[in-house]
Length: 227
Length: 230
Image 1: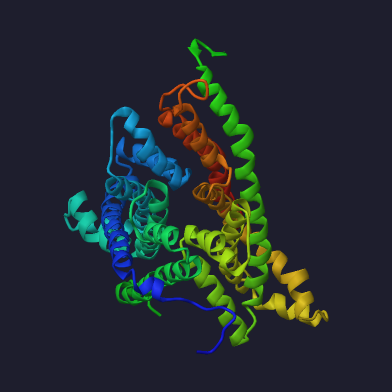
Image 2 (image 1 turned 180 degrees about the horizontal axis):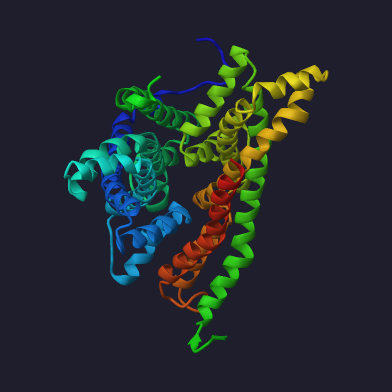
């Protein structure tokens, strides 16, 4: 073996691959639930904001501003440690996906609002002229066009949701990837190897998603944007 | 101490006092240092990125993709827990500030590249005609114009860094969240240390309110600058 100033002992990671895989699964599970949820929340509240649906629109605006102007970590602490005082007790897993879902939903509401508002009014007028109801116009005109305008920014939000799950483990002891690394390190005392692998795992996931996104984006791009 | 007819309990006054005198300065210092470092490193890297020299571009691109791709907490853990294995040691406070700066500088670099490239070619030609070299052209003509366009994203960055500075609490650095956490733990202890009761809800609620009061005006300012300057 070539003598190196720095010797990595990768066995530390391979010997514990079951823990790693479980952590990865938990990260992906929480992310998937939160991403799906924030898509639905963003779609509905974004539409309500863009079309100024009374009451819902104002409440959604407050929701968005509160979530965007406070740290996610404090929200997590509030939900997991604060709410039990009101007898609302959540399991770490539930608290984990609920808090990132609420966070992602707020950002997605903004993404979809901007997307729907970018649809020119004359398109919707054309829908009304064809005898479509307001709802039918939304589903057949505003959603297909505005949804695609909102796509890039909403995908950024989904990537952020996935990355933000990393704070849940250290904060509330939910066994996702980062917490798995943290716990392994506290038994094995090999921080360099463990955290390097942790970082590489996140980079692999985030970079793979980014490449995938570019492919999807080029497929779904609006015809008039294509050059 | 009374506020109108509402009596503020003694434990709350003590907790708030600690949060404002011990926690708030920590948050402001971490955020201030990180934003300053991000701005300096980010503008430099972003400007260098507009040079058509592939290896340099590639290296800066890699820097951006790594620090933007990693969750900030993972970067902070790398610095705080992994680097000591190489005999590089930082305090929790420093580790958090460095982690935030790496992330922030990647954001600023990307924004700067866009801003510098958006300056019309005529500006480059005119300043070159006046005899400026690459450095002079950028220092005196191009970057100052780009900075104007960078103002809104810089204010947004400040908001993001302020909020993400709470991650420092996960490695025990004393900032707003950590100060709140310590007060919740102290108050839960039996007297004379605390009062043996859980006060998590009002204390974390207060932290949410504090962050909102700091961030909301800044978010509005960023939106206003966006409309005014672009």
